[in-house]
Every structure is written in C-alpha cells, then in structure tokens.
Amino acid sequence: MYGEKPSAAAVHAVGVYRSAGARDVLELEAGHGRDVLYFAREGFTVQATDFSATGLEQLQEAARAQGVDGRVTTAVHDVHDPLPLPDASADVIVAHMLLCMALSTKEIHAAVGEIRRVLRPGGIFVYTVRYTDNVHYGVGTAHGDDIYERSGFAVHAFPRDLVDALADGWTMNEVHAFEEGDLPRRLWRVTQTSPH
Image (cartoon, rainbow, N blue to C red; front, side, top):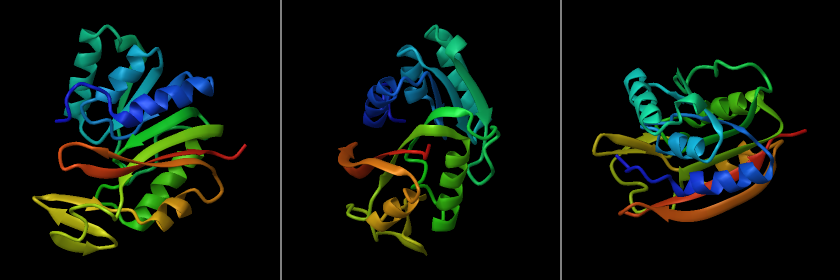
C-alpha cells in the first residue's frame, strides 16, 4: 500500500536506536513490513506483530527473498490484547500510525502501558500519529473521542495534550511535526524514553 521504501519514522528510528546501542526492535502492527525489512537490512533483529496472519506470512516471504529472514520473527497480535512478551524484554519499540487507528483514548493508554511494561529501563519508543490539525479532521462520520471515519477508514486524531499524557512518567525526547503521502497526512513523530 505504501511501497517498499521505509517510512520517515523508521529512518529516524534507526539513527536513534543506533545511538542508544540498541540491537533488537519490536515493531507493532507492522503491516506489509516495509519498515521491518528496512530495520533488518540495517542490521537489527526485528520482531514484528500484526493482527493479520496472512500479512505476516507475506512479510516472512519478503524477508526470505531479501536474505534477512534470520533477523525477522513475527507474532500475530491484536493491539487490544496484552503484548505476548515478558516485562522489560524489549530494547526499542516502534509503532508507525498504530495509535491513531480507531482506538479510544482509554485503549491508547492501555496500549502504551503495555509498551512501557515490555520496554527495558531506558528503552526507546518511537511512534507516529495524525494530529487534529489535518485536512480530514472532523470530516466524515464522527465516532466521538476525536475519531472520524471517512471512506471506510477511521482515524483517531491526536490533540497535543494526549501526546503529553502518554509521556507521563517517561522522558519526552522529541515531538516532531512532518507530512507524509499525497494528501498530505500531517503527523507527529514522538520519541520518548522509558524510566530507568
């Protein structure tokens, strides 16, 4: 859907993760895996989760074709459920566009709570979300809680106070505004570090 080039968030994350000495990446809702494959090509070991078993099978095939299958593992996971990982077991976690899916604010807080649980002390979380200053914000069917559905796709647009609330107890490293795609979508890329 988005091509084979890595997202801008993944390119940023590689630099951040390298600087931190991280070797293992957990990518949540990896989709077709363009970023997973990029992380693997860059020398990281990557665990990818997604709700679609078929999508993860396609990702494994692509990893084999690119010769990085030894660096990629997958697990079917629904973001509404606890992560199937032990406490403090992940170096770094990336979630490109995951949190702005049709999740309630309560569900978003629960997901970030799980991310914090599985990150090692000092682990880094990079995520991207659409924010409320967007062309399509407020357009379409309103579902409440800043969620609007348009053309069968629902998006939870983030106000800045939600980003700040999700960083409570973390170290906020950066909130960077950027644009992606043809619309373009206006996104925040957030980088935060779990407490030591």
